[in-house]
Length: 410
Length: 140
Image (cartoon, rainbow over all chains, first blue to last red; front, side):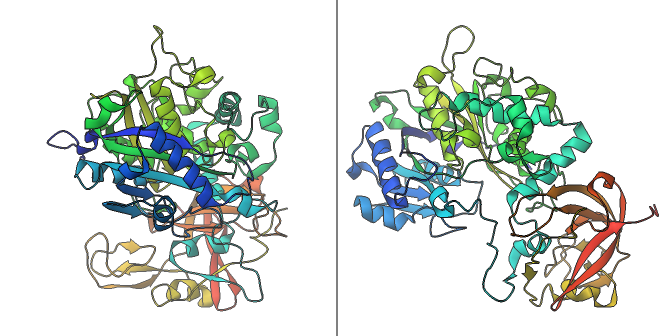
């Protein structure tokens, strides 16, 4: 089954006209709604719009979903806080990963349901967890009786497989087995992120990290160490998705959505997915390339989800930047993924060092790079040109979404 | 020396669709839902066979033999007080595309290999019999 459309993909009618981000920090002690308002107003202003122009809103996931600090404020709260009058509204946690909110907005704009959609993702996981460390999925209960679980969590929680870290570690171990992945190879994802984070004023971790530092970090769940896991933080990222016919009104290059990757062709769970080394990233990326004439060789920068380092190497292969099983050698030494390498990767530090803004910081950074606004971390391609094509991926395991973005309208 | 699992076993809710699976170990036998018409094992259990869409599905005993597909040794104190323990995905020999998330027990991490043969045993907690796996002679 192919996702190749018979006409021009409708998502190409949508652009990202503005971007904004609140303060970002490990524990800011500010409300999720206030952070969201900061990001939203920054994005609206960046798009050259006013609050009154916004007629759509979307978020992932909102509505109190997940562990404390995870969900972000529901769209009705943000609508009310900003006094928005809307033609279209949407939010939720199911779909092609965190960027499903951007995808929904693009399709709403393409369908004429809205002209300018405010899309946001807000986390306050840093403050919510306090100093107690990362929360297990579903919590650990507490109180007298042993808590009981249903749905998909029942298959893993009894065995202490309570965090995505455990599930992703098993993907990583399978890659050690099938492809000979080494810790020295995997460590390049964290080290590359830290190197780039040093040039991102909002990044939460900026101290230099050496391979020795990486290898000495405590093990969380083999083969993952602390630096293979992203850093819970507080912050909000917003983008404005608009119809492309306003591209000429912007005071910066429009970022066009060239193609969306939304497929989920394997079984939708961690332990039942047919290929344990790739999972849904394989399907999402394949469906994106089915919708465009651009190829992996056209991509000038990749912003690939790094909630855990193993997910990034899965994405490198799924997106076709290297062959199956070849991501370890591809990242070895770090040169290929550096800002001046063949594939500048996670140029704002990703989530491992930039903070777990949960997919949206990667979308934000793709826009920054395409607009040539990266300052000291701006990618300059051979010949001295700024990036023209950026690939963004969100999610891992059975949850995956991708977008191909371009500078200007194609 | 690693533990057989976390300090606290978070337990499944015994709803009608899954109670057979979580209590199957009471007689020492692992059971999976199977399609009577096409023979496909269905896990997690569902109301219909995803291969042939038959509704003639019922629990059936399996050998309890499987193979380690991948594993991790967990050190993080998600559940306070836990010693390190081994989590694995084990494929079922009757139909290797069915995998169970489980703990490997009575084995040290250095002795675990992807592809090694394992057999089921059960840990009884309240009204649940959790399938765990331990190394076995390879019958295949």
